[in-house]
Image 1 (cartoon, rainbow, N blue to C red):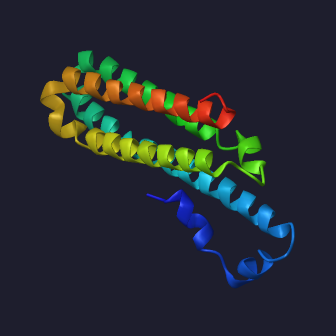
Image 2 (cartoon, rainbow, N blue to C red):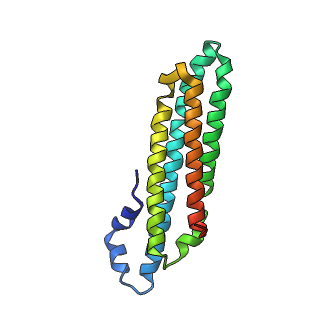
Image 3 (tube, rainbow, N blue to C red):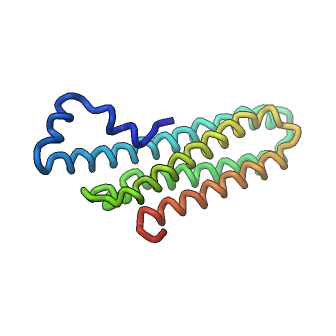
Amino acid sequence: MPEPKDHAEHRNVIESILRYVPGFRGYLEKEYRRDSDELGRQWLADRLQRSKRAIDELARPLADAGQIDLLPQLDRLRSRLDKLIARIRGAMQGYSGFFDLVRVREDLLDRVYEHDLGLMQQVDALGRSMEELPERHHRIAETVADLCDKIEALERQWDIREDMLKGLE
């Protein structure tokens, strides 16, 4: 998982020198914040996208075995994941005003980074749970309900993140 605060630490020599040029340091810091934010959101969306493979791995054998009554539950799960992925990907260019500020309140920026780290941990845990889905085929209804609850919790956390960036939190 990428660490947003580490992104600025991995700069090249020219960038390090240019940080001493008046006005340029603020520009670089703004770019680092924007890049870190984009990398983090890209990781979240990609991890969720990869976890959807487990749905297909389970759906094919179910369909082949004629257990099509279980497929709508898997479609519901896929739909919930797609919606969350779209929200995260749709925000890729969003909230640039927050990251365009040369002087961002450091305490707020730290809270956003901490929140993003929590989101990454939740997404990774969901991904691992999703990858176990084919093994838990005997309890599909219960497993899908649990996974939908986890997705709903992630959606609430994403709402909080959006509110933080809009200055509403």
